[in-house]
Image 1 (tube, helix red, strand yellow):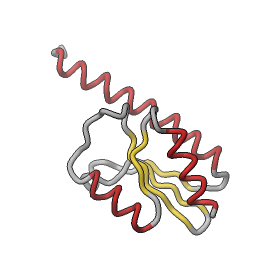
Image 2: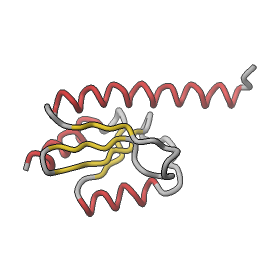
Image 3: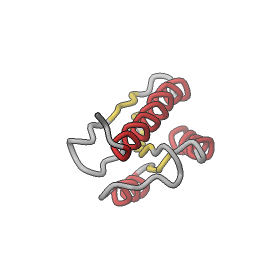
Length: 109
């Protein structure tokens, strides 16, 4: 049986997972022919959740269930590194439109 904090964690993970899966579908529609990959969080701590390969460009997106969601160790580092190399961002429902607008501009330029 789950205690209250475990139940809350399961609900939060479920919300992020749902947002992530809907976002992946939207990314595939926005960038026809792109390769959109869900990264394995167990492989390297802090690597963003989603990798988008589009033509000769790429981007990394770290999904959060909401703007105030906590960040895991190294997430800020890898998002900032991706920004310097190509494109990286934290994305959550409150900033999704802005991030997708910036992403389209970056990958289609």
